[in-house]
Image (cartoon, rainbow, N blue to C red):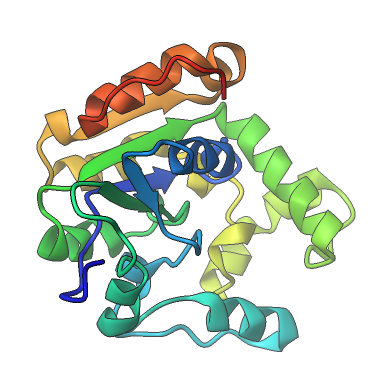
Length: 215
C-alpha cells in the first residue's frame, strides 16, 4: 500500500474512441502494472477547477470527474510497492490545460497516445452519443456542421467531432513540455490487427516484463 499518496507513472492520453478502454484493460491484467479502478478521472484537465455543465447528463458526468488532489492520489493508494501505476483519460489528448498540469505533477510520467483515422473516430463518437441519447441531431453531417457553434456555447468535448481529430497540434502541446522519449504513439488499426505486438511496445515503454499470452 502507498498511504503517502502515489501519483501515476504513466498516462493513457487518448484519443477518444480509439481503443483506450481495451488498452487500459489489457494493461490492468499485467501483474506488474497497477491501473486505477476508475477510468477517466480526468484530474489533469480539471484539477482544482471542477466543471459545471448544464442538464442531467452534464451534471452526472461532472460528478465523475476527480478534481481534488487528495481524491486523485487516493486512486493510487492500493498500488503495490514496485508496481508501475497509471490511469487513462481520453480527454487529456485534446484538452488544452492537461499537458501543463500533468507536467507540474508528473514530469517523468510515461505517456501513451493511441490514434485513429480522424473521421472514423468522429463518426464512432457520434454514434456513441446517439446511442447514449445525448446527441440531438439525427445525422452525422449535421453534428459535424454544428461543432463551431457548440464549442462557442461551451458544449463538452464529446461533441467536438472535428477538432478532437487534430492530433498534430494536440501532440505538440504535450511535446512542448515532455521529452519525446516519454511519449509512445500507437495506432488503432495496429491495435486491432496486432495487439500482442502493440503490447510489447507498451511493456517496453513502461519498463515492465513482456507478457506472451494473448490479450
